[in-house]
Length: 79
Image (cartoon, rainbow, N blue to C red; front, top):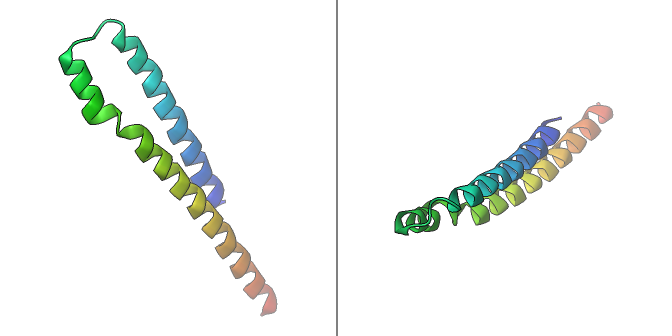
């Protein structure tokens, strides 16, 4: 079940960044100065690629956990 929790975490992370982006779009309507642009460039723009990379890593981790579980269950059946 650990892999299911990892995948659920990845899904939650993707949903959260989507919500953040939606809220940011709403904030842009009333906040459009240099400070907003600097904040976006420094803090928000790097988030999407980082989240994408984290989700890929979490998916790979889930695959590894699946394989470990299969390997361990195969060994216990040999005993």
